[in-house]
Amino acid sequence: MVNAAYCGTLLKKNGTWARYRQGGALGHWLLSALMGVIWMLSITLYGRGASLMGALGSSIGWAVFYSSIILFSSVWGILAGEWTHGKGKPLKMLYGGLLVLVLASVILAYGNSLPAG
Image (cartoon, rainbow, N blue to C red):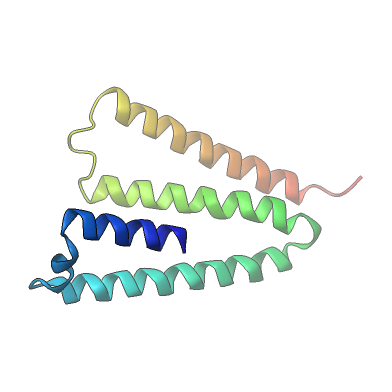
Protein backbone atom coordinates (compact mmCIF):
# COMPACT_ATOMS: atom_id res chain seq x y z
CA MET A 1 0.00 0.00 0.00
CA VAL A 2 2.82 2.37 0.85
CA ASN A 3 4.54 1.69 -2.49
CA ALA A 4 1.30 2.25 -4.41
CA ALA A 5 0.61 5.50 -2.55
CA TYR A 6 4.14 6.77 -3.13
CA CYS A 7 4.03 5.88 -6.84
CA GLY A 8 0.64 7.58 -7.19
CA THR A 9 2.02 10.69 -5.48
CA LEU A 10 4.98 10.81 -7.85
CA LEU A 11 2.78 10.23 -10.89
CA LYS A 12 0.58 13.14 -9.87
CA LYS A 13 3.50 15.39 -8.95
CA ASN A 14 5.31 14.76 -12.26
CA GLY A 15 2.12 14.80 -14.35
CA THR A 16 2.86 11.39 -15.88
CA TRP A 17 -0.50 9.62 -15.39
CA ALA A 18 -1.31 10.22 -19.08
CA ARG A 19 1.53 7.93 -20.15
CA TYR A 20 -0.59 4.95 -19.09
CA ARG A 21 -3.06 5.80 -21.87
CA GLN A 22 -0.58 6.48 -24.69
CA GLY A 23 -0.47 4.39 -27.83
CA GLY A 24 1.25 1.05 -27.26
CA ALA A 25 0.56 1.12 -23.52
CA LEU A 26 -1.78 -1.89 -23.75
CA GLY A 27 1.15 -4.14 -24.67
CA HIS A 28 3.01 -2.96 -21.59
CA TRP A 29 -0.05 -3.57 -19.42
CA LEU A 30 -0.30 -7.12 -20.76
CA LEU A 31 3.41 -7.76 -20.23
CA SER A 32 3.22 -6.50 -16.65
CA ALA A 33 0.22 -8.76 -16.00
CA LEU A 34 2.15 -11.70 -17.48
CA MET A 35 5.11 -10.89 -15.22
CA GLY A 36 2.79 -10.95 -12.21
CA VAL A 37 1.38 -14.33 -13.19
CA ILE A 38 4.88 -15.75 -13.74
CA TRP A 39 6.00 -14.39 -10.35
CA MET A 40 3.05 -16.00 -8.56
CA LEU A 41 3.69 -19.30 -10.35
CA SER A 42 7.36 -19.17 -9.34
CA ILE A 43 6.43 -18.65 -5.68
CA THR A 44 3.96 -21.54 -5.90
CA LEU A 45 6.56 -23.82 -7.48
CA TYR A 46 9.13 -22.77 -4.88
CA GLY A 47 6.70 -23.70 -2.10
CA ARG A 48 6.04 -27.08 -3.65
CA GLY A 49 9.73 -27.76 -4.25
CA ALA A 50 10.74 -26.64 -0.76
CA SER A 51 8.18 -28.95 0.81
CA LEU A 52 9.54 -31.86 -1.23
CA MET A 53 13.10 -31.09 -0.06
CA GLY A 54 12.23 -31.90 3.54
CA ALA A 55 13.67 -30.19 6.59
CA LEU A 56 16.24 -28.12 4.68
CA GLY A 57 13.82 -27.04 1.97
CA SER A 58 13.04 -23.68 3.47
CA SER A 59 16.69 -22.66 3.85
CA ILE A 60 18.40 -24.34 0.92
CA GLY A 61 15.37 -24.04 -1.34
CA TRP A 62 15.11 -20.28 -0.71
CA ALA A 63 18.82 -19.76 -1.43
CA VAL A 64 18.64 -21.75 -4.67
CA PHE A 65 15.37 -20.03 -5.64
CA TYR A 66 16.78 -16.52 -5.29
CA SER A 67 20.13 -17.46 -6.80
CA SER A 68 18.26 -18.79 -9.82
CA ILE A 69 16.25 -15.58 -10.12
CA ILE A 70 19.41 -13.45 -10.04
CA LEU A 71 21.31 -15.75 -12.38
CA PHE A 72 18.64 -16.04 -15.06
CA SER A 73 17.61 -12.39 -14.96
CA SER A 74 21.25 -11.32 -15.29
CA VAL A 75 21.87 -13.68 -18.20
CA TRP A 76 18.65 -12.46 -19.81
CA GLY A 77 19.81 -8.86 -19.35
CA ILE A 78 23.15 -9.64 -20.98
CA LEU A 79 21.45 -11.37 -23.92
CA ALA A 80 18.99 -8.47 -24.28
CA GLY A 81 21.86 -5.99 -24.53
CA GLU A 82 21.37 -4.21 -21.21
CA TRP A 83 25.09 -4.41 -20.54
CA THR A 84 26.34 -2.87 -23.79
CA HIS A 85 27.58 0.21 -21.90
CA GLY A 86 28.72 -1.75 -18.85
CA LYS A 87 31.79 -3.36 -20.35
CA GLY A 88 34.99 -3.60 -18.37
CA LYS A 89 35.03 -3.75 -14.59
CA PRO A 90 31.22 -3.71 -13.99
CA LEU A 91 30.68 -6.63 -16.37
CA LYS A 92 33.59 -8.55 -14.82
CA MET A 93 32.07 -8.00 -11.38
CA LEU A 94 28.72 -9.26 -12.64
CA TYR A 95 30.33 -12.39 -14.05
CA GLY A 96 32.22 -12.91 -10.78
CA GLY A 97 29.02 -12.55 -8.76
CA LEU A 98 27.18 -14.99 -11.03
CA LEU A 99 30.04 -17.47 -10.69
CA VAL A 100 29.80 -17.20 -6.89
CA LEU A 101 26.04 -17.88 -7.07
CA VAL A 102 26.55 -20.94 -9.29
CA LEU A 103 29.30 -22.31 -7.02
CA ALA A 104 27.19 -21.66 -3.91
CA SER A 105 24.25 -23.50 -5.48
CA VAL A 106 26.48 -26.46 -6.34
CA ILE A 107 27.88 -26.55 -2.80
CA LEU A 108 24.37 -26.34 -1.31
CA ALA A 109 23.16 -29.16 -3.57
CA TYR A 110 26.14 -31.30 -2.69
CA GLY A 111 25.76 -30.63 1.03
CA ASN A 112 22.06 -31.47 0.86
CA SER A 113 22.87 -34.79 -0.84
CA LEU A 114 25.16 -35.96 1.99
CA PRO A 115 23.70 -38.40 4.49
CA ALA A 116 22.76 -36.94 7.84
CA GLY A 117 25.24 -37.95 10.43
